[in-house]
Length: 116
Image 1 (cartoon, rainbow, N blue to C red):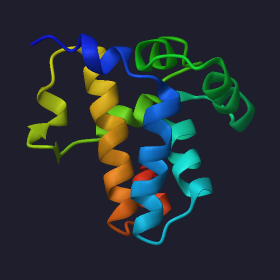
Image 2 (image 1 turned 45 degrees about the vertical axis):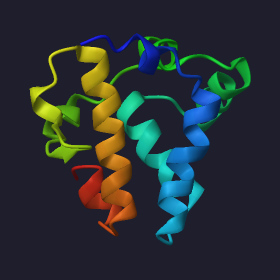
Image 3 (image 1 turned 30 degrees about the vertical axis):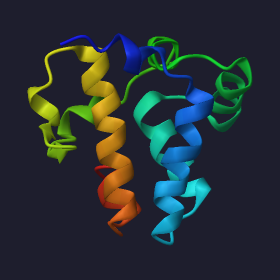
């Protein structure tokens, strides 16, 4: 499957959608940022820099300081696709982020989302 369109999406376009999904369910931008930073290893300033640079999704994940080693624990179905079955490593990371934001939007406790 060709994921090039997903990889080319601008973070500045996707990020607000992730935040909106969380906020619609009563969560905050700060909680969404916490989840994004937990997964990718960015700090707040690093996340903001990537947004300002208007990087694409591929660049955002490829330049991530360090993907969280506990990310392997992120399992389940997002948009009908089982996260752990996605073969392409970059697409799997994107699906993991989607899954984490879904968990946040569904009201799961932040400690559980961050696999503490």
